[in-house]
Image (cartoon, rainbow, N blue to C red; front, side, top):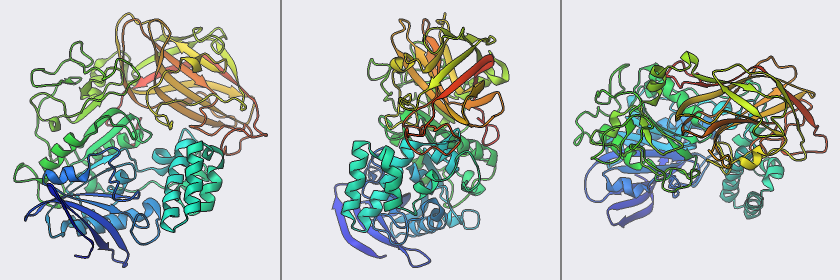
Length: 614
């Protein structure tokens, strides 16, 4: 076994660096953590582009913690990154290298033949790309825990509603470009990128920096490609055998990859798998305590057979419909209770919810998804965290299908205004179960675009107060009457709306929020975006980020619409060209007209239907 760094023995584990030689002769650098002493243990594999020493500890416990629980942990620098040899080609390289890595890790001297994979973002998709999963059982992980990832580069990695993720896409691309600068010893290039990110100048000069320092990079290619067209975009194939394996899927309500996670969940179910799904009130990088205890329970069940006899043999794929979790009857909508003295309560039930660590409603909840009563947390197929209370709800999607109050399309509201909804935040109305009426015109001025704030696409991702934004005269607001009783919202908000403009292209940015009883705070729950070219058919459909929230009596629901969300999305020039960056001298003022007679905001239940639904 080629070792290029001597073993480092620390309390409870041993660390060492190894080379893995690919079939084409390229060597990939890998760092290994294992328990002390003689023995063989199951392997946990992560493959990532940011340097194996980091090991995704921004969201996960350090690999040494997993090693102390009886696992060999291998974190590998993907081809062309870190200390690995070769050229970094993005996701396209991972199917072949990933299959080799699984086979190699199974044969390590300290491995017992069982292997699981984990990781989020790039590391989430890299474990799902496997060229030999169908043909070679030894290349198929025994179980997987992908987080915050999706298979479509356009829909799950680069754009929304026909528009690029501007700030996120540039910032991530420049991070990868800086890593390439460091690999080739370009200190000046690395510093130039770092200064641009720290000063926010990258929002304007980022494309030029990518072209200079990483011209063949994946991020630049995405930003140069039209997200309104499917041509040229890659949707990565994921093998059926892999989709049938035990899988723990992890997402966040404030994460840009959430729709990709939900699509993976549906694809696993369609393939005959029985995936576990957890969605927290988390951003991409802030999981507030993380998922490690639940992930450890998952890996122990499927990899440590001596402790959990139900675990299957190494490399053995599950047959379609074969259960890999113990059967247990669960009532739809039950909340996950904290502590052994609490039983499950009704969804969002009084006295059973887990409150936020802070009194501020804008704090992200910090409650572990492992926090259940005496039953195993792995017995719950789907659990999501309420964005309002922090409660964990089990089987909330099943609850939607049996709740009624809106039929198969879910809850809906009409939109109404006498024409002043842009200049008075309290004039526009959301009418529960009602028909809309009226029209509103407002102006998008590219010189002072409406800011995008928080949500799932911001560099400041997460919940936020948007009361000041709603006070602008270029933001149109529709607010429901104060609620007489509490209201649970679980699903994907969609807006059907007839819209016109006086220019060849325009944007529509939407936000759904909760208005406090005194009207002073407007807590944003979800955002969405749509870019429109030419004479688009009407009504238009704008999909917002899925959500799970609870409104209390006295609060109100608000929908806000604007013509920009800068810098989350680049500013539309209005001439039909592909927007690149902020306001330019040729950007046009755009008047946007909303026709409300047939407008409808609806909350569509999240279903386990065909992949791509919702």
